[in-house]
Image 1 (cartoon, one colour):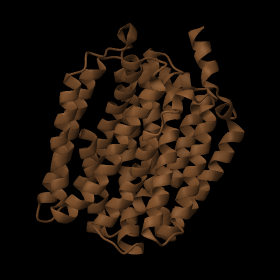
Image 2 (image 1 turned 135 degrees about the vertical axis):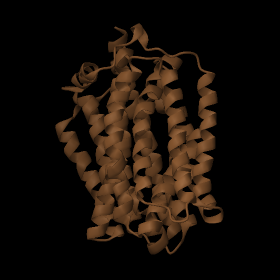
Image 3 (image 1 turned 30 degrees about the horizontal axis):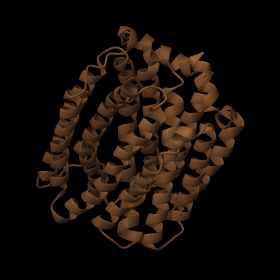
Length: 389
């Protein structure tokens, strides 16, 4: 319920910015406004998650995130909404997500155990993608039929579900009592990554897909211009990748039996890039939505295996900090992708930006494999035996 509400704001912010400015570049700049607090506070949040009760940390971040959505609602209700509060509150919300997500991810392995983690990650993706599908479609309906402010206020109300769920979970302190949060503890997590090309490869391949192959900032322009629709069409474009990801997540029962998980990540990202590039070439909305859905299905497969490789390759005492690096990549990449897509579209056209980004994504995978062949060779069964030994 909480993530469903969050998706209303994810659609409302860029739609409102585009309504005020009429500029895809201005929409893309939301990414630049959010990426710095997101990355910075994600690294700090990972250190905090390895130092304190992760459940209590999540309670604080959820309440503060609700306050940012309330600020967006109040701005939208004014007679002439201002642009700068949207950027400021979006940046604050991104920073809070940077603290929230590492703690959330670090909790899961201890809740379900090592052998069940791939299946748990798949179930998590189902929950995540339900919000990705229903949220944007519902956002388009609410914005067009009620108001932007209503979308923001529903998001505020949905945070109650997150608070109630957290209160039902037992305390979640890190194993061993935790490590005091400090710059040195952050540095310890970064040192762990250094020289481990497998982990770095999982980060870089996601950056490649999101920075070059993420056309999200162009959806308002494509929906209202190229496809000739309105807020409802824009909402469908935002919802389509989530719809495909949901379908993909529902059929991920096979993930626990995959040994070559790195190879699965590579194939999924290539499919993502190809689907996005083709989406930029088709003028028919139903086919475009199908291609976005195909890209979303490929992305969820990549996400499940990247999460599994990360969480099962590091000790619990470092999971918060390593999760923070992962979160900075996963959530910061799309923000940079928004900026890249908006900038290229401003120099050329939205369609050229989409096609060139998809092609660049595929070329990036080829370059990464030359640098980090360990990713293609990763064997989950051998890694489990090594850890148990």
